[in-house]
Amino acid sequence: MNNIIDLKNKDKAASSHTKKETLLEVINLKTHYPIKGGFFRRTISHVKAVDNVSFSVKKGETLGLVGESGCGKSTAGRTILKLLNPTAGKIMFDGEDITNLRGSKLRQRRKDFQMVFQDPYASLNPMQMVGDIITEPIHNYYPKKKSREIKQEVLELLNRVGLPDDAYYKYAHEFSGGQRQRIGIARALALKPKLIIADEPVSALDVSVQSQVLNLLNELQDDFDLTYLFIAHDLSVVKHMSDRIGIMYLGHIVEIADKHSIYKEPLHPYTQALISAVPEPDPKRKKQRIVLQGDVPSPENPPSGCPFHTRCPMAVDKCSTITPELKEVKPGHHAACILVD
Ligand SMILES: Nc1ncnc2c1ncn2[C@@H]1O[C@H](COP(=O)(O)OP(=O)(O)OP(=O)(O)O)[C@@H](O)[C@H]1O
Ligand SMILES: [Mg+2]
Image 1 (cartoon, helix red, strand yellow):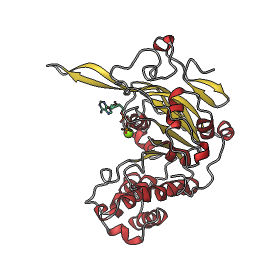
Image 2: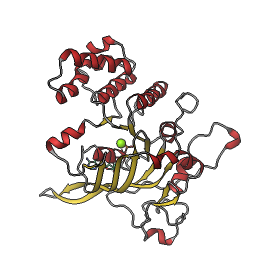
Image 3: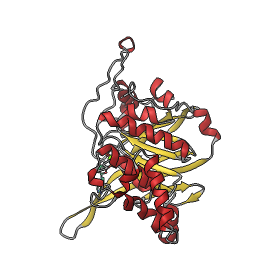
Image 4: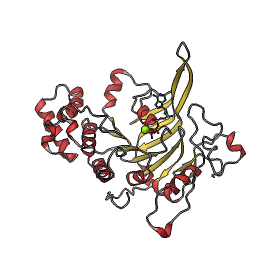
């Protein structure tokens, strides 16, 4: 991935993080899915998909959210966009508490945050004309806008994501995966949002087109003044997209810092294991791979104490009883591990 991506310089170091205004702040967010069972379909337990997650994203920044399958990345993204109701915690967006926003106020806010989905095959109606797919949100929010004006905007959006004018009259099923993701991006941009949550936007695409779509997302960030929450399970993709990176494990953020610190001096044993698995093209810099034992525990019945202790190569007795706080170990570098200080 490193070699084929020709991305603009994303080195907007952590220091800039402190200066800019916050766009999104998530405080002690929990999203637990109820599990129903028995004859009366009562709630018998909960999947703790997101469990006490806190982070913030500054305007114009990209925060990468990384972790293995099932760690709660999509649930966190969907909760922030209010597609799911949080079980607890607070979501602040552009200075407003949106946690309990409903009805017309939520609808009004919704245009400011959009999602780009993982699977461009499932997220677009294949039988809908591309022009209509992108027109729909504009028409819904601005019903008085003239059709001619909307069409012009849609054509501009199509061109901006690298599609020709005649894409307007074609159907989504006529396009390849990469082109469909471009349509999905144009749809997300239609209402000129402030925040885009991109949930594994390239993982369903051929490797050959992944970097083109990532490059496009990076260019659009500057042109449209966008802030990204970029979700991925692949650390190498996130590295090229993000200013800062949050590492998730079993519904928790275990470490968060600017990307250089995450790669050069990962503090949490889980992050260290993830980094050790990233292929190193330079044989002189070969690193020791840390292979984690066992499987990720079920979020329905998570371990006591540190969620990672059952697989942690450095765990000591008290890790099974003490739940570590995500604390600032160095300026701008937070980790949740009692062995790190
Ligand atoms: N609707 C649901 N009802 C119950 N449990 C769910 C539901 N959706 C997700 N989960 C569970 O919540 C946990 C987190 O799922 P989520 O999809 O957020 O993870 P993820 O990190 O996005 O995974 P992936 O990388 O596979 O997309 C998983 O254990 C998943 O099985
Ligand atoms: Mg997901």
